[in-house]
Image (tube, rainbow, N blue to C red; front, side, top):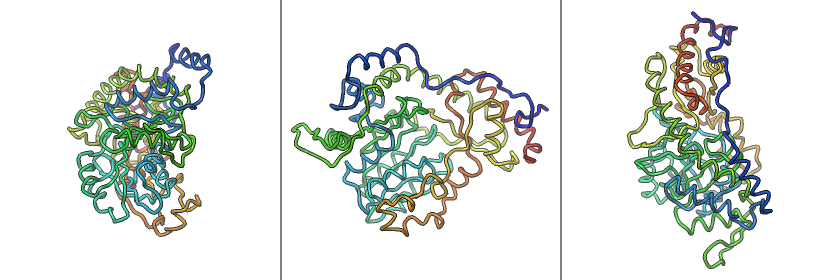
Amino acid sequence: MSKLALLGGEPIHPGSLPEWPVFDERDIEAVSNVVRSGQWGGYPFPGPQTSEFASRFAHLQGGGYAVPMANGTVTMEVALKAAGIGWGDEVIVPAYTFVATASAPLAAGAIPVIVDVDPETYCIDHQKIEKAITPRTKAILPVHLGAQMCDMDAIMEIAERHNLTVIEDCAHAHGAKWRGRGAGTFGHFGSFSLQSSKILTTGEGGVLLCRTEELAALATSLIDCGRPHDPEGVVYTMGGNYRMTEFQAALGNVAIERFPEQAQQRAEMAAYLEESLSEVPGVRLLKRDVRHTTRSFYRYVFAIDPQVFGVDHRLVCQALNAEGLSSWEGYDPMNRYDLYQPKNSKLPAPSAFPERFDLEKMYFPVAEQAAQHEAIWLDECLFRGGPELIDDVVSALKKILENKEELKEI
């Protein structure tokens, strides 16, 4: 039995992992061309690189009107404001996601209403959405998480029945498709992050896909200091400066060229991983809905049975990382998330409705089980190293199981 690297043994993968972001001379030339052009910033909006990127991104996702922005948090805030959602309105969000999904409604003056997730996918539970709707509810903010997509058929049916706006959080879902249709094109808006760890990145940045030209014009005005962007040039908003720069857009245009090949490579290796993980006791794959026709792999998430492994997921991730394989235990549940501190924000909604932000009284059993005990998030780089790297992941999990008694002593 090999000794765990965490306990001083030899790591299974002692070498380096594929780097991210990927770049070559095309990126350097694209940025150099922006420098030479003299048009560096986002004004007047959109610049030529940004306009090209918006068109390419909408084509990549298969629809909508794309508005590039400064980041993938403000995209959600802008979507809410463009939909007329603000003071005292309720926005339903999942308990298992990055903090931005809940902080965006707060920034718009709304109340995030947190609901639990589906144990089979870790995405928002549409049955919990239905139960959380009140006369104040104005929007649903579902999150496509890891390599999973929400049940968009069920969510859109609920939204249409209750006349609710849907803003898809697609920070993990570049290129993903549900019934052959791109993530971000089902709801009224689709919010995408281009932050440096995302599988399509401009360093920082975001894109908001809008269902209609009118919504896109409002969103563009909101990020361009309130300037009108409607065809007649007469509709002003109370906006701010959240524009994307020409440097970011130039990098995005090159990244889109690489994306299809990278996406296919990740998909092939993820399928190989799933076949291989069937040999590992105590591992549960998240359910893939047959309607989820194309997956995206920002991170690949699966669950462990802590009783079989003898320890919870944090220690398993530490052991995997020591073996040279990049993993993470995932987000905290929103009610126990250090980054989610609405009462410390001095934003108006927590002050006006303090009872709606009593996190200590909230309980989300599925999200808490995932976040505190069982979820393993594998980094996307593991899916760009060929089948040998996937074999190393499986071997490392088996090694951890073989050494679980020693691991318990840590």
